[in-house]
Each structure stands twice: as structure tokens, then as C-alpha cells.
Length: 317
Image (cartoon, rainbow, N blue to C red):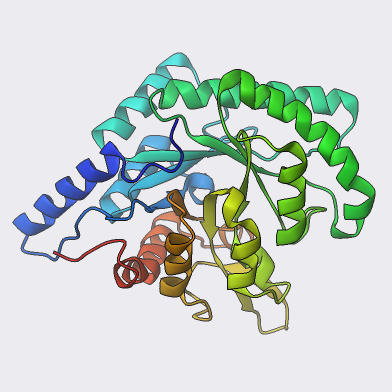
């Protein structure tokens, strides 16, 4: 698998199909992304929809790819998907020319021995699903690691030991596992994320970059990215907003209007990143009454797509 490939067949086919379709309707179309940074939507924000409906919606909106949420008891949980389900998803991804850059999991790293073994089995199942859905370019598997920020010093060496077990699964299945620093987790800063993966020193254990978790710590975008770009293989985007009662919570990307996404994308491109940038709708958003997953996907696309054009990653025809 080439995780830094310039432009995939699916991105090219989708751009061609969408451009042709919009041109036929007399609307503005866009060309294939010349620098090969995909623009996707995570189905983590579409749990209430059938998978087929969610995939079609993302393709119709204009996203080049999707992340499937494979968490326990979710629609794409590897333990629950039948062989027919997998065939149907793979066929639809191909028919819609959608890339599949990533599968989302949610596994604690420093956990009791029995849970650790269960997590290893879930990782194996996710790896098998990855190869079954996209054998030519298997998606990576991304997950947060759990714990609490104050526990980092106490847990970090234990994390190295447990992560070596994860690396053995990743190597055996030739599937990249990307770990994500989280504002509420033991692993929560860019420098610590860099430190952790460098202790493993394996191409199969890499990083997810999600600036929203560092912005909340008042860390600079460029500095955060500089610390992680060498090991980053996947990017989530979302915003932070301050509510009327003074609390900070996650929001759809572009809603807060305090992140320059054109600059963000330009920094990624200049740093050599050639993966996908994927909208992640936080549970803080989708758990609110009245949440509409289709409206969220459309709004996120409307907010961020102009930044792709400005950064030279998509060109209006």
C-alpha cells in the first residue's frame, strides 16, 4: 500500500464523473485534486443512516472519500458485518468512485490484560475488513488511546509496551494503525504523539493529526503540525466554539471561522502530506437534539471546499 500516493484512481474517476454531471446541468464543476489530498467525510457523523444511504450522500455532495466508523455496535462494526454486507459496501464504493482512506476504531491502549486481548482481536478484525473492502489500497485504522491527560507520565512507558503488540498485528496484516492525540486522553500533545510513535519506530504505527484538540490547548497550528507531519498519515478536521455559558465544545469545520483552512491545507501540502483530510463530526455535535447528518455533511463541505480551491487542491473548471 502506498499511503502517500499522488492521486488515486477513485479520486480521478469521481472528479471526472462529478465534473461531467455538473457540466451537463450547467453548473460549476471541479477538476481532480492535483496534489492528491483527498477531501472526505467520516461516517462517525452518520450513525443513524444506512451505510448505503450515507455513502451515496457523501458522493453526491462531492466528497472524494469516506471514513467508515467500525466501533462496537456501529453499522460498520467488523464483528457484525456479514460477507454480503462487505461485498455490498465494496461494490458501492467502487460504483461511486469513493476512496476509503480510513476505518475508525475506539480502543484503549493501557487496559487490563483481558481487554487488551479483546482489543487485539478487534484490530485483527478491522485489518481483515480493511483488506476485504479495498484490497489494492487497504485503509488505515485510526483510534484514540484513552486515559486522562494527567496520566501521561504514568502511562507512557506502558503505552509503548502495549503499542508494540498493536504493531505486531499491523505488521502481520500489512495494515497501518494511526493513533490520535485527544484533548481528554493521556496522549494529548503533538510532542508526546511524536515521542510515542518514535519509540515504536515502525511504518505500521503512525499518527492522526487533528488540530482541534491542540487549538483547545492554545497551541499554534504550524508548530503542532511541524511536530507531527513526519509521522502523520491521516487528518481529521473540526472546529471549537465557545457556548453562551462559556464552555468550549467541538463544532463543524468552518463554523467558528477562526481557522484559516486554506493555510492549513497549504501547510499540509508543503509538508509533503498526501493523505486525506476528513471531516469528523464530534459526538458533542451529533448528540444534540435535532442533529441532521445530511445537513452537517453539506454544511461542512460548503465551509471547507473553497479552502481546497484556494490551496490549489481542487480547481474550478
